[in-house]
Length: 293
Image 1 (cartoon, one colour):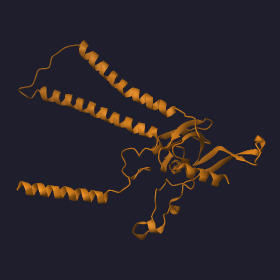
Image 2 (cartoon, helix red, strand yellow; image 1 turned 90 degrees about the horizontal axis):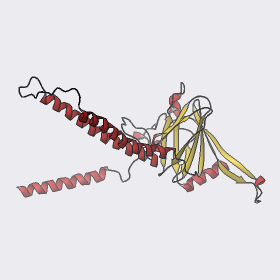
Image 3 (tube, helix red, strand yellow; image 1 turned 30 degrees about the horizontal axis):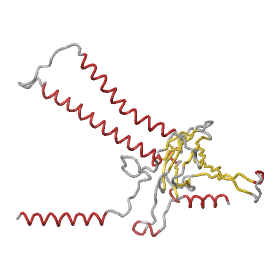
Image 4 (tube, one colour; image 1 turned 180 degrees about the vertical axis):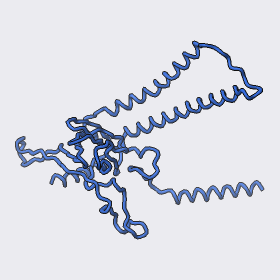
């Protein structure tokens, strides 16, 4: 009987494993945009966002440990000192305890130090600016974004004279695509219907950036306060009129990353999406060449 049960369990687990191999896709799908009923973070694409997620996980573990300890203490106090119970303990009456006061003062201080050290390291790493290879300027308007790439020089002739070189910049505006224009091709629709994807997140002109490259992003505003935020990149920087803020990016993988304006800026605040498309260096150089020409 035991041998039959073992054979049955073996076949069952083999069938379960085979079913999982059929269901689970070969490639992992990254969540680079918000999804319905999302609770956690989006998948990270920069070292900063990875550090934020790791720090959050450490804090959650610490909070669960502290909560369990406090709840256990409350449960024990209610259970042991229940006046309705015949076997209830009698609480001692005292006005002060030096040892207890030292413990409940030093313990929170040590916990805060334990939290503070990695948080300071993460904050300083977020403010660190490595010598950038690319500078992207972002300007917030009511209610769209303007982008400028200004690192490129076009040589007008074969001469080495500096006067024969022209500095060219790539400028474009990025607007929300209306829902009625947001369609995907017929073959990719559901049940033969034309579908709609990423409502209120798609734009007509995406920001294109290369992978594994140090990028400096300069952010300012033209009218009111805005906030340039892309969760997967770990970026959220205010766009202030008359002030130039900067942030550093180092994107580790290719993909399309979605964000939105995160500062209330007027009636169309919810209609200022941000789309960053990260590509390989060769594709980025090709895109720059097409834009400059």
